[in-house]
Length: 449
Image (cartoon, rainbow, N blue to C red; front, top):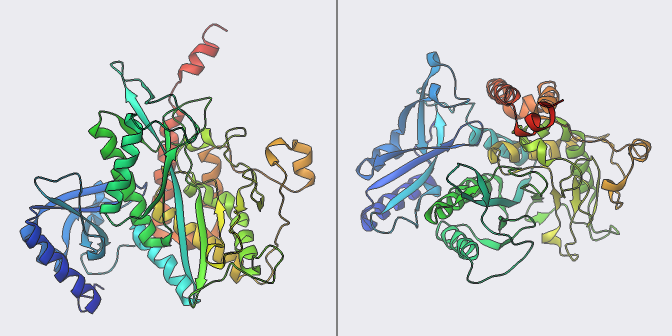
């Protein structure tokens, strides 16, 4: 049920209402995501904000992917006042944004809301005394559209290239500026390896807040790019022959104010809990791949040779395994593990939920098998060598990943029955749509044969 008596929520709502009046804000966007992670938004007159905080806003859920059929269509968007921010690019006529939790008309939470699924995962961790922190490295391309509706990279630069007069440099600065204005502490922005490719990294935080920040940065990147008549895209692999865009996620687990991934008595300063966390994520990597790499195009990125991990292994420093422990200079608060297969096209609420529960699965298991780390470059191993060492690869397509997802009891636990079915069928539909497309490569290769 909606707890309207929560004093913290009530205080936040009052602060927002006061802010709306002081800033003379006219319009407020109510936002949430569909099951794919696409941001949905509708605008309300700011004069209604007190009622909206109290009772929410009704909408037709049957028109939102993953939100139910027509006979169960009524949904209620209830704003989370902690996510209220002015949109920094709307300086003249002020507009604000607030992220919503989704409810059913009877006041119960809607089980298919991706934010709710992550909140439930966080709640499970809390029941065991744990708090999950994460931070994604968000890669994206800035593209120039031409008159033929083709796309090309907006620059010809590479990794860490610097040009203070370039439009892309200014776009990165503006992204950081807008992020800061919306409460996101950006730690680094830079050019990535491929032409037109960039990365923005922001400070780690608790999972729900980090997911909120992730969808916010997606909006900022697209907005700033559009301001310069360019296209910001989080498509994993927009061009063949060059690196795609990933979303490496750095993860740590805390209890009673301490990072439980750190152990000063271990030769590598990593705890048995971190090793079990890694084992749990390796164990569940194949079924959760359908969530971490959730578009048919994602599997064009997950191929050897382009700095994308495709093999189930873990190690230190080396970037070729699926999971790696970066050098944290023996600083206890910085002990973390990075998973490298997620990409930024997916739904971050669902991505962080499956990462959290799969890691917990390892920690809570009494007999989980912890594989030895490898610092060999697994990209260069032969199939025979990988088989001898027990290294297997991630699925090669969304369809293959979905088959493992469908048969995973842990994925069913994370999603719940309703959302599990909604997600599976939505992704199956997406895969089927991709199957009927005939590409230029196919025409060039086969028409004359």
